[in-house]
Image (cartoon, rainbow, N blue to C red; front, side, top):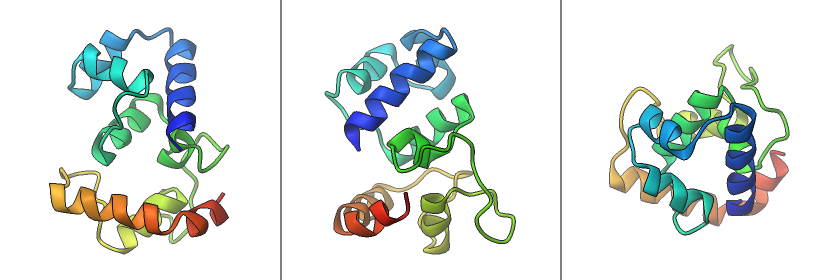
Length: 123
């Protein structure tokens, strides 16, 4: 998943002719942090992934390599969430309008790790 994220982040930045500094300013971080994401030295928290997806108008699924469809699809009740976003929202773990707590982030990471097979089926 990390390799997909790095590849797609670089591709999206190149398509928009966007520098690491410009992306950093748009999502409220530093260009050093973006550089660390691009080099694979650091994995972004889920709320940062959501902000990056928003900047490039793509789904989180696409950014993480869980889908080849760039744009957010409507999977249930016109929510506009991608599959993984819908599942996280359904579990009460994702609300893009509010910052996630460290406990929520850890839980999401554990859920993703424990459910890799299920996540791969969502592709």
